[in-house]
Image 1 (cartoon, rainbow, N blue to C red):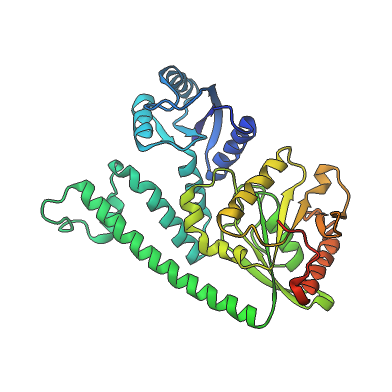
Image 2 (cartoon, rainbow, N blue to C red):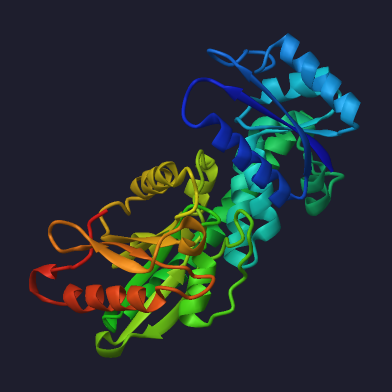
Length: 367
């Protein structure tokens, strides 16, 4: 599907890096970006977000390039989305809906699918004017509506019932995950979680270290479901390494909440390996974004090692960097070609051994 991307520069952050990321997100969702319309504003237009003149420009671009989809690099209110679709006579998707759509395509596990559907329902509940006939079909349709109930009220009730059922499912899955975690804690197994910006190379690194065969690709959100594997690190003994979902700037709040059960693998880890794309020109901003989400899920107190990945593309050499207190700060690796992996395994082993010493001494840097 041919799509026109729209980005408005409000003077905050790296606008062009964010727009480039929108292009990658669009491709990950299966769209074909054919043009980008940009502009500057002090604040969004209440009705059309971009203003009438810019909306006319988007409409002309759609017609000239025979595109049928408009993707905004911003969250839109329900009214703005409706007004834009009427004005442009094309389907309009905002950044939040785009990310939710990618998650819906990629979720593999039962838990992942439940979490995605919950997030989608919470987001789309504000857009009920579109009609939720698929929910009626699931429930039987005819005879469903109560006395005096409008279509909108019926849809709202159906969504409420579905959300309640999904939350109950998630709570059950969360209890199962807690039981597994307690079993690991009883055996005093050192737990390590890979975190990082989406497409930083976490799954490639995970596969190289554990031979797990997890799906890894050069695309955003290739991994959605947490995968854990046991590893043996010599004198440090066994550890459990977990691969988690990638983070992204302006992650929809519905996803932060819905994916809390998955992200709890991160919250309860003894050590975080914060994987960074060393070749990215905006790596510092990406590090900040990940740390921001870690703070949101109360995982910012866990010791972490920065793993500078893709050094074969970024002009770095394998190595370990320490801070002024002799704590491991960064390890430079290339997961793709295997450079520096032994150094990383050694760093994890050191942290695992020291974590069991009195006073919880650690050789790893605090986040």
